Image (cartoon, rainbow, N blue to C red; front, side, top):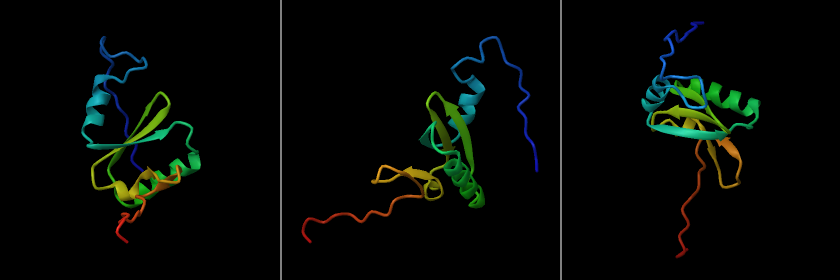
Length: 104
């Protein structure tokens, strides 16, 4: 297993406060879509979702902000990531909802 560490020194304008450093924002900006999960989501669900994404070779970044966990990813990978369905619960993948035709 490869271990990666960020060894970039913190500049005077980059503080370890509530705000993400500029380099972290730039890294997050490389992705074009995000899933915002509540910070209190079960660790079992989060682990399962991340392992599912890894197994399907989804390139993603995991970020944390106050009250939420963010999975940044590239568009088109939504089928392998969590989404909130009409039952108000989190599931992995997109909900298969057939469009309603009032003429039926």
